[in-house]
Length: 532
Image 1 (cartoon, rainbow, N blue to C red):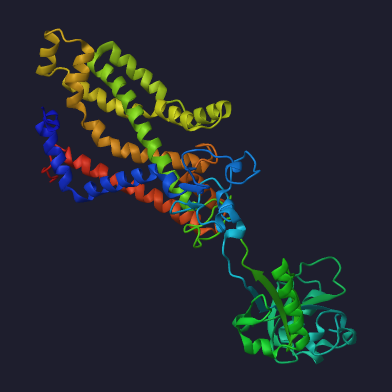
Image 2: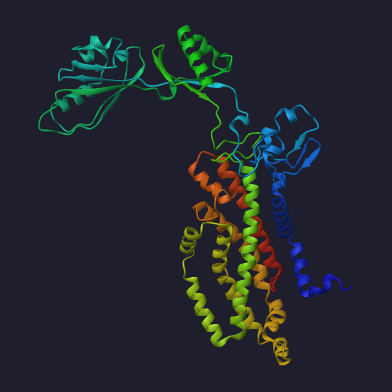
């Protein structure tokens, strides 16, 4: 019996031995193979359907076979069952002979998660922050207050009592403030004025007067705006409440300092927040204007990673981990099929041109140049709008354009080898042309195919992700890394939609590059040459 290794030439065995010595490339190859094999069993690892169901003494395998709802629920419908809900029914909860075995990750790439099934913090957070007071006064040329709006708190008086009051008697104005008011009443061009003073309680206040452009008639009144100058001294307190309306976190001392009526109002708002929603409100406390806001951890998609969804949830409520694993299978399968088909087409085209040469070669080259000038993206958009987006259409469109590069290399190989002695000997013996091309020339011209295969695979995976990102790739809801990155563009705060798909794409492409570098070095006939 002839051993399999006898079919491998000594030169090829030496090249394989060199490749094994390159540990980075060798282990990258096995890691990539392992990831692909793992992705081929995605249904056994990430699935919302159980692997095995035992019900009333019968065995069921929902991963491989379809069972209607009525199979597990008497009087149920003929629709697809929700196995997680069925597992909570008395038939399974109370009868230990009925049970389900789910995959390690009981989430599929297509089904949206039930918000009720996601464990969230059962607290209401109350954030109390100081907001700057803002007021304004309109003064006449004598600096008498004609109109006042919310300025009484700055001056320690009621707004109604400020009419005709002399402003410098109520607050210490800088000398240039009066000059700024005077220049506006004089009809002169004046830039925006801004100064910092102290209010009646000694707190910092910012006074500003808007810029003025000269007009034919001077203004009758000039407005001064007052605003609290909080800076870094602004009050900010956080309180945490449980469902019993008791405070279980935050600044308790601040809470105790609040009046009883204000505490009651806040707890009523907290109770409303537990029931649904509570509007924020403003209140005065110790001369400060404070805002009380209320927040509760609610499940809104996309949602960050939790225990039941380790990589988070996307914008449609689907598990990101499941979509990344299924997307790995889609990407690698697409890349492998595309590279094999496109390299087969390119090898055939290059072989015919290189072997026959002459008019066949020139004609083939001109056709190839014309074909390469056709815009791929426009063709993809046109065919997608006519036939609809699909995996097969995307594969065909890529394959009919992706063969051009390898055809040039294979043409050069066949041009080089067709005049070799072993080819001419076979031709003299009457061996048909196609046998000479396939059995004699092609095995000696495989170096471009082998060395470019990993790089073409990486390029195909990256191109698929780019097309999915742009919206011209696989049809929804096909799991795809590019589609997850497109969601990240919409939800820029969802870091898990950026990190995990990007990391998966980076790792797979990096492994492909390591393998490609190793193959190229292993098949390099001048391994020990150095550029001097």
